[in-house]
Length: 364
Image (cartoon, rainbow, N blue to C red):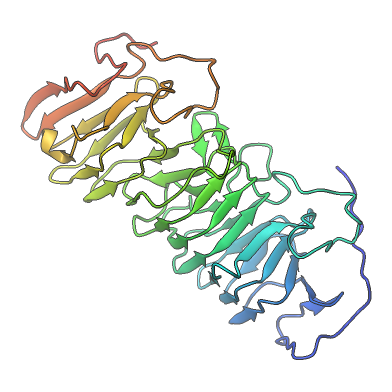
């Protein structure tokens, strides 16, 4: 690992700055504040400052409000922000003044903060994550998340995977981050596979990441998120879905597919999953979807452009499994859609928009 030297260009006290007695964050070169203590009481970070996190496992135990335009850089030795019970982050930027969470080596955001004259450049995994850690109430609006996802195994940048985590994520950009496949698990840059179903994910842009987004199956997703920018997409360019559905839920994203990672995702008795036209569901090997109230559980199941297919099917919504053309779809890649009308077995759906399945195939 490289050794980084933090160059202090002179200690300047900026007029109008105030620091609470329990928050000994100090300004160094003008406009840069080193954060060396946890947030233990309500605190506001100014929109015209750069905050460099220099505390191992920086904890937010109270409300931290971040003003539009603020830049938060994570030092290579201090890679995480964790929200504790009683804490939350209110990062409400604007379209013209977004809030940026990025690498200490990112000179394009706030200049050469590490003072090395551009010798180092930012890269995927320079810092790890913001961990919502089972809390609720945090908001990230018009934020940029850049160069996160540090770890030997794929790591999220914004992590809502702890049960009960809930947040609002709107109009944010996730670029140049990690995520990916870890054994049989899929880890999104925005990792909400076990988040509360009240989590809001709208109008965000994901590009140049490994794996952009994982969600709990009960989170409503409309068609407002974007999974490309100019010529950049993501390696696993899909929404990866985990769990069962026991509330009325709707999925509307049509740019990329929904990949069902549960071996047998169930839609509960009397509950519905509504699909918009042109929504595509892809399934991992031997995967299946079970509708416990039968066909009526899946609203618009035969809508225009709606398909159910193999994870390897690049013809529909592109290369979801991130292997280019190394794999091709084939019959029996997945089991199918099972219709179960409560007290009687109906059997496997035979819809024309189901591709590459075979419920009777032997396990491969």
